[in-house]
Image (cartoon, rainbow, N blue to C red):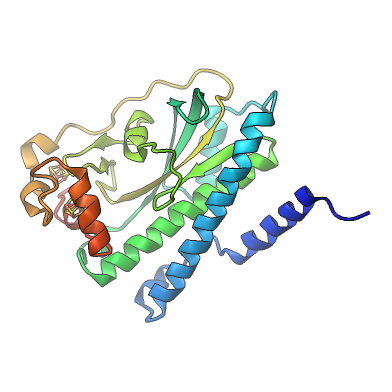
Length: 260
Ligand code: SF4
Ligand code: SF4
């Protein structure tokens, strides 16, 4: 009897997971080979997210009684996978026409490295941290699937983030406040955080009440607004930021000037 297609997929997943080293080393940052290696790793991690998303589509359709999961279990799982931040929020998912839970995770960046923005050093560092966030989201999805819980990653750079706004979800999950630079301002990290999320059906129990955890310092500061080279912040137009970011393969000036 041959191996079933599902089993083949599972084996493939295991092999690919082994190939993806979970912690991309920080020292890669200083290597001349970084850009090529990073691009390759990012592509692999995004492929992985996409495959998990496709699989989740059928699981969400077919799964009649999903295994319930609790908010504290999810936070613990995210911490076990080395996420610097984790919070859970309920949201309405237009794709599945239902209420879902999102486990929002964050990976912090250091002030020293962000001081290199804008420029190639920051671009590589930013890409590395994107990779960390994507790999963690993928790992969390695998861990949930192993428990019988259908879940899907939503990642930065991903083509299928379900048009969910990770920053808004992060604020609603109580991780921080949205700043004038359209980033999530997080205690201890300021705006230097890469976000990703894992979506799933609602778990067990009510979610604890979330409180924004930062005072509204932006109104008094405004340092990032005139510093933005794309005038995205002056005009309150995130589209200008995206364009500028793509054309220059990164930016990060608003992170670099932020005093938080
Ligand atoms: S630089 Fe100032 S205004 Fe801009 S996000 Fe940081 S605290 Fe807010
Ligand atoms: S263009 Fe640069 S400075 Fe302006 S919002 Fe985007 S990342 Fe920040």
